[in-house]
Length: 87
Image (cartoon, rainbow, N blue to C red; front, side, top):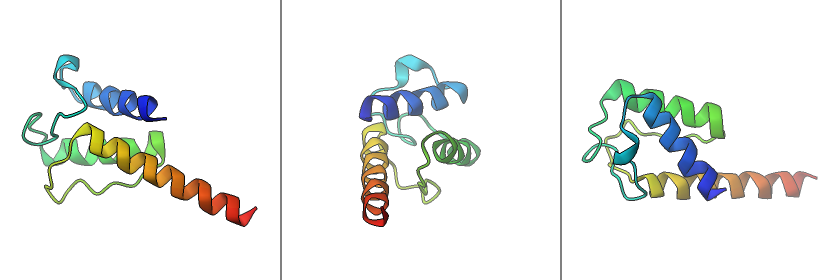
């Protein structure tokens, strides 16, 4: 899943006009990419739509692509555990 998550994040950022060669696991959203508030909202909405993860990016806490992957994986694991308990 982690490779799929980082590839999806990179695809979203490329769609926002960020050059592919700028995107690495340790790339920071604000310091390295200079995302503005509109781009941040678009990224957050696309993460929810494509990966079903809820991530608040608007608080200006700079995050790396790897950190977003870890959060996505943690949310997926939590969701899987809840589903398993219900069934």
